Image 1 (cartoon, rainbow, N blue to C red):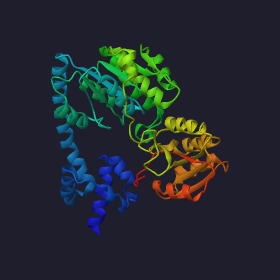
Image 2 (tube, rainbow, N blue to C red; image 1 turned 180 degrees about the vertical axis):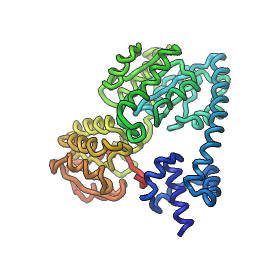
Image 3 (cartoon, helix red, strand yellow; image 1 turned 135 degrees about the horizontal axis):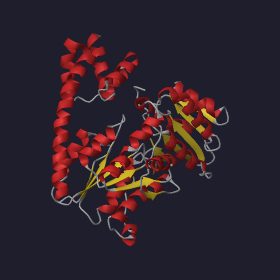
Image 4 (cartoon, one colour; image 1 turned 60 degrees about the vertical axis):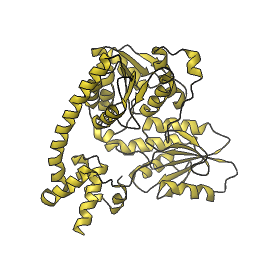
Length: 395
């Protein structure tokens, strides 16, 4: 029993990205379900060995010191290599924001690779170690453009990464209440995301920013930053136009850009008919209040379908969670015909309060259970399902 409990704690620690404070906060509610998701890594093995002496939390604290030291060595090595490559003519594009980073990165990559040798960090590799893996294995002397996604959980994280990769072009995709629990406030999120504009302003280069996000516009005006703006009427159009602005800036003419075939990122507002046995807008990879409302508005316009929202709500919203979810529930009214809520918790209860019996609501335990529920509804019109976010068991 003692070893089982230890393994559950180790799994939780890994899922919480070895963040000691978040581990302690969720430790009491950790369940054996977490064991299904654990990945056996070197750090996890070392943490387990030390945990017999220091406990899981103590072992993590000790190892964190050594990890931080190793990360600093890697950081300095990346700085040196990027400086060498930039002297050889390579340009760096950095992408920051609360949402849309990976989609903008993929669109930009597809547009630029028609003319240049381009490398982009894969998926959500947006930390020092993730960027390092891509740099060492894929970027070489012949690389002309390196596209880097930069992530953040705290104020200063983006500045730290930008100082490492030294971008020539910065893209600011948007600001939303994502990871609010970690940042502490929406103002802190805006300050953190604005760091890419501050860096460009201080060190030179070009900033490309999302004019469709009013928070971006307000913060850029406060900072007095000059930007090349992009916008659009749908999420796809907005993200695509960011890539178009970069391509235009780097000399790819409009005719050539029109013929480029771009790939849609998986599970990021992706329309699919095969994966679930019905027509689904899969936005399950991640979500935030801005994207949630944007998705609902799009769903609301699809009146030839029976419109169905499937969601477990949003995570890491801290003390604002209930208010935000209740507001999201109000946004559902008129945009969905049915709502399927995943799990019984404060998030889904707040959503249902906001819906206020004005839309039919059902509950399921796991996201994929929605397929059974939709089939049981025996609808007259073809269903269109929007999956907004997918929350893991530890939440």
